[in-house]
Length: 393
Image (cartoon, rainbow, N blue to C red; front, side, top):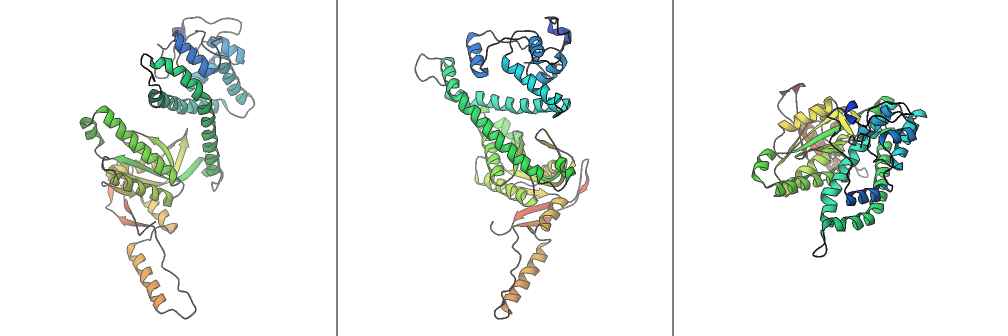
């Protein structure tokens, strides 16, 4: 629910016609009105823990913030315009007071506070939609004939709400600790903002054709299975899932070795699943700008382009990624170099002096094969490398 854009003085109630100060149509739904359905109101009170008490104007005045700032906070959180209906609670007032207090104390600038509201709203909106569409829908199947789904919903939410709330805060704190740890380990202040990361896209091949052939339910199950597999593998091997796009996922890792393992594990997992189409992965390494949990920049664009030209069930990487992989000793500079090192180690072992342990040949985890140079739209000439596994990991 967003407040109205009016900037009436503190002593006057604003006009009730919210169309006077219309919100841009791409930000909110102007048709949204607080529901009068008794069950919906009871559920809202249960979830929010408070009754409707304030109009947006009254909430802003009680919180001690201007209508303009309150309006921008609400819209950033993703709530629809409700005009001047009495639909806000003490919790809404407290949220406004907290955000504005952070600005007044100098802990956050006003644009940063808006960004905090927007990032939190976008993330939790998706989570809430998923929980209602998938989680609660399955659990609210009426247990007895004659009962309706709505009759089951209230007691179920009453039982689940405190547990899910505690779990949400736990996961958020864990993720915040992990993200903070990664940032403070940056080499310098500049890298704390614009960091060097390995960024990869994994894309299902022929997904558009599948959408024409599969039923909606089958397609949904396939996408869910794909996203779940990717999320599990990325997390298990030390990467971060940035976002999912149906037939494509975007992930990032702090180093090339981690990104290589994730990419190859994804290919291997999809190959073993007969229900899945082929997969292709593209990875680039370089400076990345991070904003609101997403990543931007030339490195991300290059990874996307590499994905589009990658062969089926294969991983293509850029030159910077290949160089980083050889620098860390995860891959040889060339297969010829690796063969020479292995031969030299074998000779040393055969001709070794008694009592001296010969140095073993380097054990490389991955191999790199240079591919054809080709122009990539917007990025010039690119020489991709084909990434493969060497030996066992």
